[in-house]
Length: 281
Image 1 (cartoon, one colour):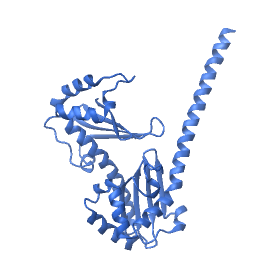
Image 2 (image 1 turned 90 degrees about the vertical axis):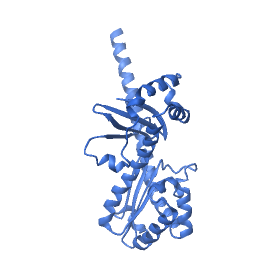
Image 3 (image 1 turned 45 degrees about the vertical axis):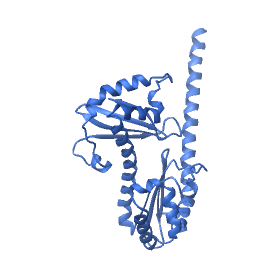
Image 4 (image 1 turned 45 degrees about the horizontal axis):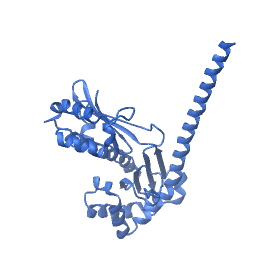
């Protein structure tokens, strides 16, 4: 009898784990479906704001990440004015057809929408969940916005959209890499990202982090990172690794590594924009 009871006990735990996994997966699916459902109204809202120069200026001011593609407001306005002519009004019927594509994942939302002029508008948003805090529903939190004159150019536009996403993370990596090269910079990094000084169980390990980075510092000083994400990816040598995943559910966790020697990688992990870990592997 004790043996049967033990067997039942394990079966019960397995059943609980299966149900829990199902709930998590179902929740993620619902969240992704909700993002896609908001994609068309969001595209319409952004298109409406871009219909005037005043609206375009306001959009640029409230989406600082656009500066990665358009360094100045004037350059953004030039692109928008050209895009108005090429894209035209978004075609409502295209929301469920070939003229509208929306791809959602735990990190955000990417949209390609075709207009009456035959051109396309491409847009990506980080953490686009439509909450009032992010103002995503009215088109803020945008990390990329671009235009293509025809179907052939739309594919290249999608590649550019993904490249810009990589560049945003690469800039964060570069800033942390520079900071680690000095004691003062490392301390500032720790102050701005306190999770770096926490152990697996939350214990304070700030001094351990500072000591580890001090040992690493001679290997970093004088080293030059590729200037852009594209340059790093296009390198003949395998020098970068990027992982993006959603663990735990509904968080944005990204890990980026650069090869500091023939067999060692300096890896940094962010969770919802905050540096969570720096390690050499």
